[in-house]
Every structure is written in structure tokens, then in C-alpha cells.
Length: 108
Image (tube, rainbow, N blue to C red; front, side):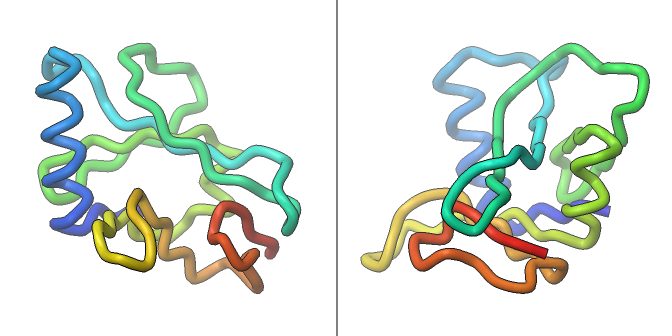
């Protein structure tokens, strides 16, 4: 399961409304190689399901990920921070053994 915190739900709703995205769109999260710790999160809006996609509904937000990424993202909570220490989406990932100082990449 991939979870969506209230803070992320609110911000995702604002972005979808601003971009005129209808209910056919969902949040796609994935993990790619890169960053100083080796793996990087990617977050997009999409409306095209692929054959091996894993679909989750949490807090009224549909989150989709490919099977390979899900192995890294299992039980991750997507959050949003607008505080002084940084603004943006945060992946609270219990599978990450370490993360870089900026929080953009992680390792397992």
C-alpha cells in the first residue's frame, strides 16, 4: 500500500484543479536511478494505466506505481510540507536505509 497524508491530499487537489485535470487522472509515483544516494522519487499525474501497474486508493487519492517501484515504495506515505525547512512533497519511506541531505534521493 502507498498512503496519502492529509497534507498531500490537499496539495494534490489544488494542483489538479489548477491544471484542469479531471477524475480520469491519478497520481503516478515511481523510483528511478539517480541522485547522490542512488535512487530518486518521481511524481506525476497520468491517465494511462499500464499492464503491471499497482493501484491504491488512500484518502480519496488514487495512486499508481509500476511493480518494480512498488518494491521500494511499499508502506510509504506521501506527505506535503510548506514549512520553512523546505516546501514540497515528501516520501516518508520506511524501506529507505538512508537518504541524502536534501531528501531528493535514497538508498535501500
